[in-house]
Length: 172
Image 1 (cartoon, one colour):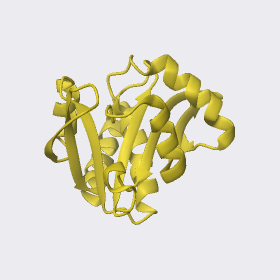
Image 2 (tube, rainbow, N blue to C red; image 1 turned 30 degrees about the vertical axis):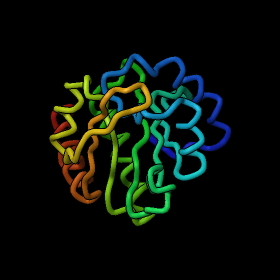
Image 3 (cartoon, rainbow, N blue to C red; image 1 turned 90 degrees about the vertical axis):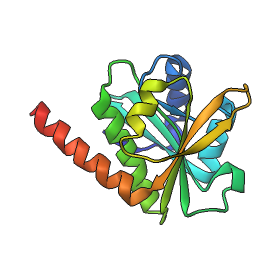
């Protein structure tokens, strides 16, 4: 079950990210910044949501209210910095994690959602274009292009909720 992380969860979050950051198919990462900057941004300007199963972290997501480009003053936009799942998690875990972030952002009156995906992650780009709009590309610090998604939060929330309901019916 996804829930807001508390400060006592941070050591386990750090460990989980270090162990899983290169293993996952369903991840969103803002690759233009380093690991330490991810953590600092989420702590100062947003939050962490964790999926804990049997006292073990199975997923971590980080978000900010506002974007780094605008020094987090554009509070109508939420930025999904990271969604990272353990290898045994499936697409449904990813969707429920993303819905948890969107729900939290909505409580801050966020109207738009932004996230980036590395251009070589074709499978992810194909998946994300089903529920979000591509608005351009940006170079990251490594010189690679990232595909930039930007979409109204209500639109993405409604599409994902509908999709999650369909998957849940197929599982039951």
